[in-house]
Amino acid sequence: MIDSIVNTLIIVPSISNLQAEAECTVIDDRVEYSAFKGGDCSLLEVNGTLAGESNVYPQIDVKYDWKICNDNEGASEVTLKNPSYFKLWRYKPGKKAKKETLLETVFADTAALKKKAGAGAKCKTMSRNETLDTSFLTTFVSAQMQGPTTVKGDFCYAYAFNPISVRYGNCDMSVSTFATKYQLLHNDPF
Image (cartoon, rainbow, N blue to C red; front, side, top):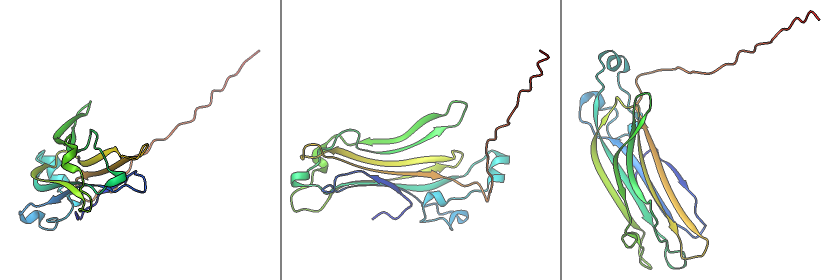
């Protein structure tokens, strides 16, 4: 089982059993990250003042893990449809933020995730060690598995989404909008 902060949305009929997981774990050996080692990347905190003033953001070693499982068989067997995938992406900053896909593995081979009768769940897993660039505020990790079952009208879906948001120190700030109400006064002399 992958231990992490993972948001999972599963919309499936009661006879279905699909699973999707996506996580990021800090593996950096440097002393300044020892308090975060082994923890979820979203718990990372970097020195925002130093990074902002020097425009040098730390590069931190992390491990990404993905897992999708199919435990359907018999009458509720799932035929995978695209996209069933593992994905890692972020947005490049700028006036028009542009999506940058760092990794995308698509599973088109449905036989690879087909469960045999009486056997345990059929799973695909993947791990990847990377360097997390903390100049990007958020990196996204996700896994998805979906497809119709052999029962007419049934469709199975499992999705895990884990945004990795680096904190830049202890900040307590908020922004809100406000509306100014104007009243038009009209002095009509007639």
